[in-house]
Length: 601
Ligand SMILES: Cc1ncc(C[n+]2csc(CCOP(=O)(O)OP(=O)(O)O)c2C)c(N)n1
Ligand SMILES: [Mg+2]
Image 1 (spheres, rainbow, N blue to C red):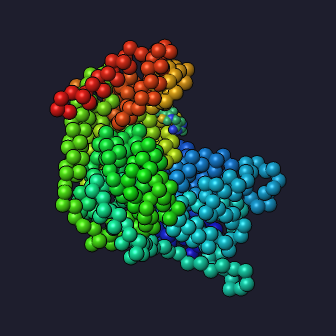
Image 2 (cartoon, rainbow, N blue to C red):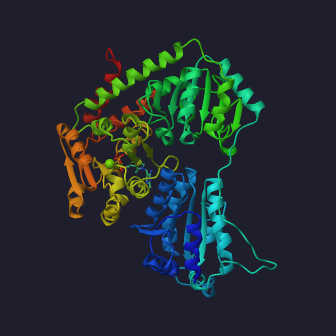
Image 3 (cartoon, rainbow, N blue to C red):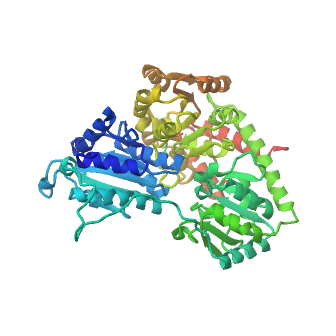
């Protein structure tokens, strides 16, 4: 039985299957913290949600987003009024932009003080109106809680988006009204949401099949919408003799060890993905909103078919001939009997040849000498050792390049990053949420030193706090210690034609591995290439979380797969304008590039 609104809130969230809420306390939510305390003392339902205390509310929002990404279920985060609510925002935008269902529950000052320029009073509805525009409501009376929870959860799931529930602290402490009186002006809602089966009409499927059957060089581009459709993508690609490129959020949608998978696309992508898109005559895009048009076929060069569950995402990246609003797996399954097997396999064979050459090139690039460690080697050695069922979380930065290109995911693995917001900072909190959701699986975060200094170091404290709850404690945080905000340094050089601005780009050093040891974790610092592999063996065999600190060379260029004339011109202008590291860059860029043209690559 519920007593207060706070108690009832947790009870109703339990009905929705919420097992965990990531958050940080404050007097704006003490009425809910009291309810957590009562429920954890055994007075309540044993399935009542657990409160996970993070270091910063933004991390709670990242974790709620990652929970959704790694489980397919609703993520929930919680923060106090005012500053706590403001801190949530970046993580909530990460969820919104990557279409993840997340509910944010925030406190507010007592009703009596609102509008009084009161302590910590912020207009929260306006603050959240953009990030949670599908549903942001304030509970002004206990009778509302039931339907506000039901609607916040259902709308987040149905729309794959962020919703927000604002609860003044005196409402939290009021007597619960689980069942509003049966009278005019009350709302009587119920819980539960099941995804519908969404398949396009027969006529549209026929039209799509006609386009796909007419083509002789079919390229597929899959994104996160294809997660869970691996069998269908494989079958369709096989029938159509297609190569398959993957947008970053869809990296785990299809294993990288299939010979016709060209890997990532875009600035962080591969050369075979580039070739696939440049030379295809037909594009089948599945569950992706990959934005960069220069990496897609030139308008008019290919006929296009797109599948997306969200009608709003159709036809916005390429003028598609057929736009299919539907679930990826179900729609591909419905297309299959309509597709004719391509008898001429030469396109597919050409793509497979390109893919084989690419993996050779990647292997060789990883072995090239650098000062002291080539970052590609760190990813390459990890890739070879990835345990079955591993879950990976990459941060934004140069690590995302190497994650995209060098890591070969196998069947049964999961992986994600901040795909659309591309914010710094999700690597460590995503890994923590992955661990809570799948405590029996090894989890690896791939993070830059900038991101570690932004928030990752602090979140190591959360790892130390909770690690004993995880049956398999293998959570490895790999830090690329390059003392540089490297991704942006290269953007300054290659996009702007400016030399590296040391004032904005250089980072202070920090003893990541030693700090991990102070927290009772394992710290491994690697500063020579011959230690890289063994260090991974040690990290992967550890009985507790590990910080794997790799001292890497910031002058190894994360070159786009196809460096354009403009980029080459910009880079040389940056060097001529006196880039402080010009000599080393020339050496590394030349080495990396020359590898591409060596015979047998
Ligand atoms: C919150 C946020 N601030 C700034 C950026 C711009 N940005 C993208 S990558 C990057 C550098 C990341 O540096 P680090 O974490 O050290 O990784 P590295 O590229 O050096 O491997 C920056 C500043 C961003 N994406 N997000
Ligand atoms: Mg760095």
